[in-house]
Image (cartoon, rainbow, N blue to C red; front, side, top):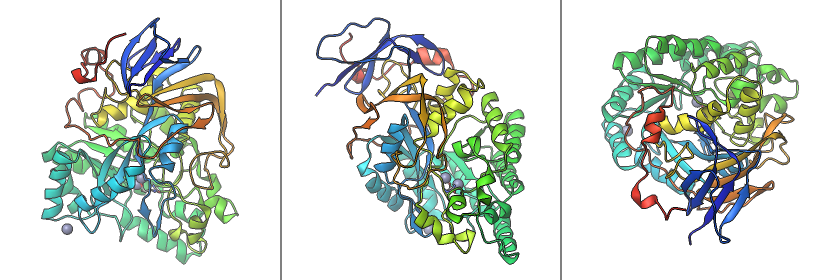
Length: 488
Ligand code: URP
Ligand code: ZN
Ligand code: ZN
Ligand code: ZN
């Protein structure tokens, strides 16, 4: 059936401009963006007076249903996505791990995990070892499965970590396939050494996690990955940039014109490490993630780097564990499953921290939470925009309302929330996923199986002027003909 929806009277915000306009949607696709659209009785009308109408958020970095550190993250593709929708995020990109060394088996396992999806999603693929079959399967992933980004862990020695030889081969393969290399940048050998040092000194609590892997180890790996990418001459995406030290490596490389993308995550932007010293183990352990949340000062510097374009888009690294799982590390911080929440909180916290504080504009907010991600992974302007022909992934945001974060009312399955008690200005009042109203009046209406896999098409204009949205390119965008419904 053809669902019809009109969003009336709001301010439509894209990364390249904002304007007073109505948005008319048919069957999940935006078919008109202009003032004073008139419709018949059969159309559902949402009043957006005094609100911003923005593209739904796209989270470039999540770990739903992830098997990690001997356990499984509690949010699966249904609960994690439901939480995302309640917070105004309408798409995410998750990390597929190979199964028994096979990328295809990993892809199939994740297809299964994601079959309960209630919003759109894409995949990155993790590369954990190297041989001829991995190299061949990378090509199949790129050409047949719509995966265009491959992540290399430089840390987690003994499980995920790859050495420089694998990293180099992987980067070369990415280059030959037109794919994007991504790194978790920490020196895993030095982290291993640092952890041993802490345990030998009797520091077994969560603070040992931070002390064992200081910013210099993140900066070292970031700088090394940047130089290897330069040596191979291929672009690089650095996930979860957590420290000034790592950010400065990125800034330096970008100044020379090297194609390096830096992704801060919400935890790194708004939190500091003080809770890691809390005498209550569970209170402290819930903040354990890698790279660690840094001491106060790094957060503000990362915000500044985001506002000046040194860093380009915000992820969450949403990877949630219950207190009972965090408790695996009660005698040894090395056994605390690493990860924090954020998929539901990202839009509100970025708004409050970056826009409400005056550091960036509303159009920049759309860029760093949605459009830039869509551009980097080449699904713009199907995603990340409110343009005729784009998917109707839309939020209605009230800048004069407010939010408050509470683990008893959040939608994630985890029983903790690292942002507990935070409040601020702005509220996602309505979330629309492919034309369906899925969040309104603080109520979720989601159905498992309604989300779709979004394959990433071959890279086109990826790196020509990624910081500046090209208005000409946007206006020349023509949606595929089959997407147009009758004009209004
Ligand atoms: O602590 C984290 N970041 N957990 C998720 C896995 C990763 O390293 O991204
Ligand atoms: Zn193999
Ligand atoms: Zn990581
Ligand atoms: Zn991650």
